Image (cartoon, rainbow, N blue to C red):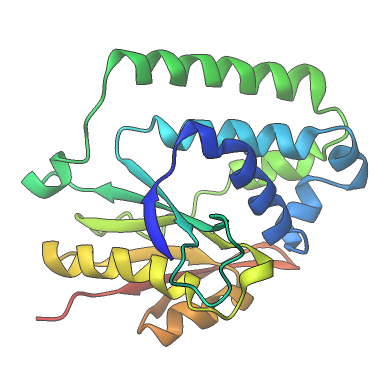
Length: 224
């Protein structure tokens, strides 16, 4: 298996993977009750958010893809997982991530308009009181860290769990952060912390979004 940049052609497959990987996630089931899933709200939201990630100035998106070296090779490349990384800071290394262009700016404007239209006219089956509650939360677990690499999202195709895919995608960021001598930060569900703890991440904060939804902030500092 290998990593490569996520492309627009990957959008449908990544959306399918994301939906399946978080099928039992408490926050997803709250934000997208069965009727909202049936009428397409979940998939539409996922597609818009992936498109937004692709054109964010400080974000890099990768997918893990199977190849002939894998024991589970099926004869054709399969999407195994994805990871989104963001870089925060004002250093020369951070500035290299801050590339932008007219197309990306226009695309972000279009996506913003599509999100507004979707939320205003199409997503009537979603619990907007709970969504606004989450949007109004002010917890900032990383505001005091001037330079860091953030893991903004990671998921593995459930068909390929326990094959080292998540660890391989995580190691990309760990190696990059070590090279730039900055910490990695992320937010995970309690169930999702197992992988990160294995790689040395430490819990630095915890936020109760709802009684059944706890967000754990974690950090991994670079080695000297």
